[in-house]
Image (cartoon, rainbow, N blue to C red; front, side, top):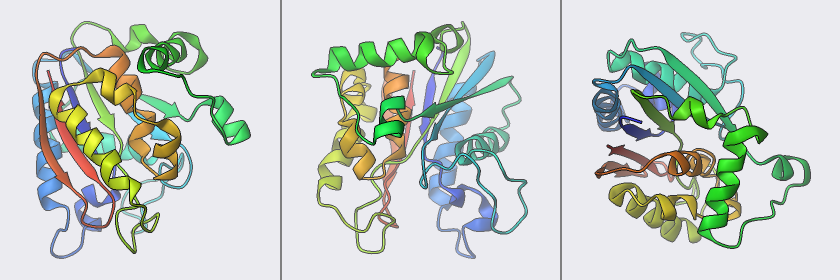
Length: 234
C-alpha cells in the first residue's frame, strides 16, 4: 500500500445535507485533504466499507433525493470523497461485514489476544469474506478506510450515552495518531458493536495489511455524540 486515509462515513459529508451553516465543513475539508494526500501518486484505490445494521446500512437513500441510493452508505460517501479530492484512479469498493457468527448468533467468539485477532482478520482476508489479501496488497494501491467511532457520547446521540465511549474513542485516536496496528486490531469488537462504532469493521482489516512508517491524526470531534476521526498513514 502507498498510503491510507481514515475517514468517517457520515451523510453530512454531502454538502446539501449538512445544513445552512455547514456543520461538517471542517470535517469535510480534513477528509478531502487526507484522501487527496493518500491517493497522490497511487495507481489505484481500494475503499473499505463497513456494512452492518442501522449505523452502516447496506442500502442507503439520500433523504433529499439528490443522490441515487440503494447502495451501502460507505460506498456512496467514499465515492463522494474521491470525487471531491479530484481522484480519478480505478476504485474498488470492499464490503466489510460483521463476522458471520455475530450476524447469526449475535455473539462473537473473540480471540484472546491481539496476535490471534490479527490472524483471525487475515484468515477472513484469505477466504472467509469477499476481501482478498492480494486485492489490498497490489503495488501502488492507496487505501480509503471508512468508519466512525462510538455513537454514544451524549444524550441525543444515536446510541444515547455510554460512559465506555470515551476510553474506547481515546484508544482509537491514539492508535490512528501513532500508526499502532496492534492497538487498532486489538480493539474490543463486542464493545465496539455495543457503542455502534462502525469503524470496528474496517479498522482491523486495515491494521492487518498496513505497516505505516508515519501516522497523523488530522481531525477528531463528536458534535452529535458520534466520534469522527480523520487520519493519514504512509
